[in-house]
Length: 635
Image 1 (cartoon, rainbow, N blue to C red):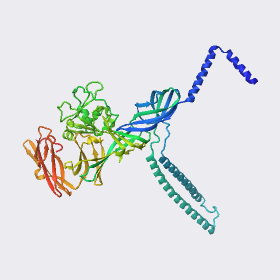
Image 2: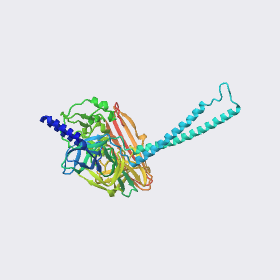
Image 3: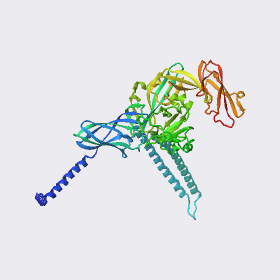
Image 4: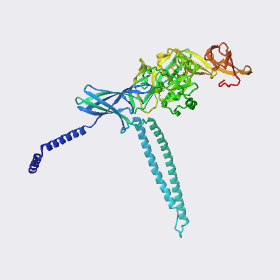
């Protein structure tokens, strides 16, 4: 008590000796220290978001989370974990109760994220650990046996330098060493076999781990939210954002029991995602839209002509690998990719794009721009918005090959670009929106973040179709069974590969391209080997003659079609003769066997009715006259 009293008296004397200014400084420092201690004790508020639903687009995904976090009163920094490892920060939307005011949101990566392993992964990992322990034990046993071998070798000398051993001792020692060596060798052989067996098991377990691995080294995502809460409470958060780390593509199963029943089409989707979050029991919606495509309508600007240097086009004319072309504008990769393709710079204004023109049909029309088809769909946006790094291939279609596939829209040429960019009907609701279609799937799905395709069933249709047989002997001498569908727009199909099953047998693959501008969608159902087609040149009616300054070349082909089926077939056949592109070159169709002739494209069409076992013959003959000092390519 005396000591305490003395200390208190001393403290009071110390306070009394201070000036008023010094005393206030000490009080301020003390209060600031208390605030700092309080803030340090409070720390950063954190919580985890749970994934509720996703909307997967053809490229990209909208992810919707919920989170429940205890907030203190006043301003706080909240870290929300378990979001995608890559997202568009401009798309982040966070909503909460009226008690909470969101001031700012930023995205960071969580490099300290702990790997959350599935039960299957843990089970295989534990098995691998046990096998590895067994391998280590075998290695220790082998080492012990090997030490016995080394010891026997070091002690194999018997007797000293001047003293020998008698025969009895020598026999005993020889028998001992022989027995021991055999015993040790036998043990080592057995251990080698056991080690080999365990190593094989370990190898299989590692492969299984690799299959189950969801990239445990990947980083996670975090949202750092600055907010103000009116009072301390547990608050709910709704979080939505767009990530580019997911996509889906369509694929189909086409089943036909015979040519009289409807075609059964199974509409499926291959969903892939690498968002860093395993989707577990999520509400899944697939959309045919693509939020990454620029949605700005184009502005029509004056079309100005100017000369270009042909050297650039010649430099890459035969270059088929787009990745090798050092360009930043996709139109420069297109330039020179086919004869007659010209690229001119923009309208003379900063930021204006380049214009692509394909010489040929439609060159005098008001709009000479070619039709762009990107990943099977007509592209109406700014073609320069597509990065050359995202392009896998570019194909050019001109004249007849363009109009036959895309009608009048392809009269100025078609540039086909492929970027690098696969019964559920009772659980899938299809909705047609103004700009796209969506498939809402009621069944919860688990899709791990491993960039591997996950098959999802969407719809099943029984479609009335008209079957016909088709052949183009100049291109392929086989006959194809084709199913024609009308009003296919109602199905909201996406471009994709299709498995063909006809008469309960897998017959091959096909490709569905619903982006065609034609009224009828043709689906190839595979090859029919029972209808045999041959195409042979008739030598006695083919040859070349010299006429003064010209050369006249005549070509005749005979096509035979034999129906080896039990039923009568109706066969659509197409053949072609060349079209002149020069006034000095004259092409004349001499014989067409009553074909329907398109003189603009040079395509001949027949509809042949062939009885069972019947063989029909068709002939096509044409002549080409041109200056004898010229050479024609492709004839």
